[in-house]
Length: 407
Ligand SMILES: NC(=O)c1ccc[n+]([C@@H]2O[C@H](COP(=O)([O-])OP(=O)(O)OC[C@H]3O[C@@H](n4cnc5c(N)ncnc54)[C@H](OP(=O)(O)O)[C@@H]3O)[C@@H](O)[C@H]2O)c1
Image (cartoon, rainbow, N blue to C red):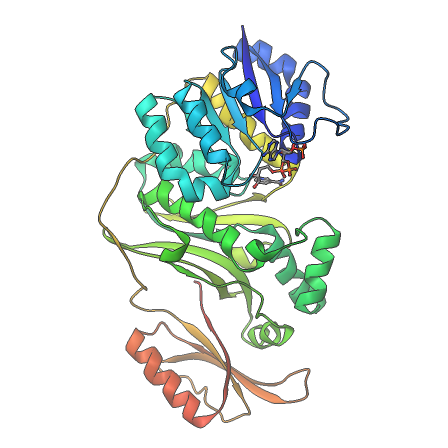
């Protein structure tokens, strides 16, 4: 028997999928007992040359040719964008087809509706490729962690920003230079706004928070800060404390009704495993009751890695794996953790960093600009301690920068 796929999109990910399918054809046949083939693919431009795409795949620019084809069992959406892809996937489910998508923008924005429709129709809707394409994170959260209790997740889910911050830290590049380099190497898009402003990472955090805790979040719900304001000076100051900065998403269960969700450049110790994740690599640290902290790392994007995640979903559907997708809707509130550590950077040297209950560590240093500064790492502070301490520091010296710490 042959499982027929209808591909919506035949760009970087779609053509990667076609390549891997042809490489693995014999294994699929012998080990799954079925062959898998792409019957047709939706494209914008029918005249575009598509080397490596077999002539057996019918190309169309009419989505209904695929969505209403009774031969096609699985629709794979790798076109991108929220509209009209949302309508396409609804129609696919209405027409009784299983759906796989790599589209994080869509799943973050319209996932709840699509999941509800898939549940109503008793059809699989899978989107492993939508979060950190090359890391099998959703499958693990759904299956392996089902019997565990996850208390928090954090990580690097945007390769572009991690590349930029790594180049700034390791080569002393300015933000603009590192961004330009990322664009030249194909790690950043010509309009990098979604990446550098933290929106792409926030989309992935929304999907993870829904998967793990059943939270129904939108971008407006939580604090999102990008990396545009990070300077080589910030990295130099954090270095004094043996720390660095990464654009991290953080999702924490404070108790069974209160959660913290944010995307921001956080200060973290260089000894933290996430600090060692360089360049375009992604990593997600999961804290759970039974395992403690586990780190998943791998390529966050790329045609082959993302197509691999899409194919893993296709195989799961063929094998009839049931998803533990959350249809849980619960009352919850977002709030800040009770205590957080901070880094303050002050101009001048006023010896403000004597160790105390509030101050863990400090360092006076002469920066590359020739001026003197102090970098102070606090212990975990309550909101009140934080505002009192900050007010006290601001009276003594001018506060140049501050970071919230991840630990
Ligand atoms: N690339 C990655 O590394 C990566 C990683 C993770 C997730 N993703 C996600 O995967 C999806 C696809 O990404 P990609 O990099 O493969 O994109 P891409 O290279 O731009 O390919 C998009 C494909 O969709 C077709 N298409 C788009 N809109 C269409 C429309 N309205 N009608 C008909 N055809 C349309 C395009 O047709 P033409 O070929 O005719 O232009 C093209 O074949 C996106 O949701 C992206 O966020 C990508």
